[in-house]
Image (cartoon, rainbow, N blue to C red; front, side, top):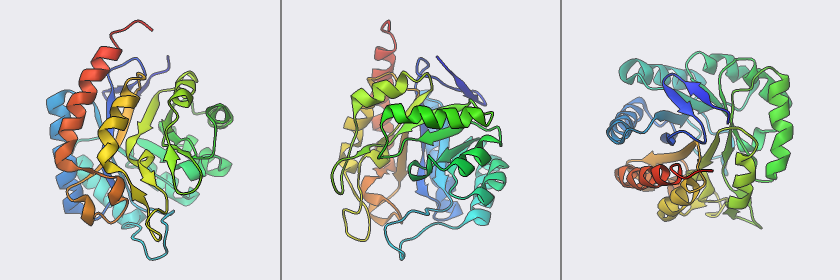
Length: 275
């Protein structure tokens, strides 16, 4: 089974589960530092490998009036500050080709958003950085269609690919997580990540913004863990009701440790079984 190493972290479906966690979008440096430090302490306490995630720009917001983030230049400065002060690996997403080389200077993993996972030129630019890629499966693609995207990445010289499930479109304004489909994704011989937070979305459910089901985060995290995953992706916020993006899907920071304790116990159990 393929393994991807980032510093001292091994992302593999057969290794102990890793956690990608952080803010949906950067709001300010003080909050980012506060949240990242608490996440680092929690994951260190539980002995769970941790990568910090946040977006510097949310280019696919529901409304033109929605907060998008501080932008590329400010985002890079905040990421560098987090690395300097906390010595943590960073993952963030890119939406346009001009962002790629600049982000590659500070990120340890680059994420390709689900809606952009078939954009050949963007994939090429990200692959050419040589960095590991977290490739989100679009809500409209089947697991088998991801083979074509993997082939694109590998044709551009980058085999360090993780696949990320974030739910599939189910009618209007709804997502479902297909666990049989996730099993097919896992069989593509790439580390598999479940994006718990975005799978809980109700897209456009609030009219001018996205609704969500954050109260079901534990259920979804445990269901995914049972499949023997490489990692979970969970976004947190000190006060989701005041979050500037995706608050209804976001986990309260003070509930994060409780979820991880259950995840770790289940991961240890399922990975003790023979395949």
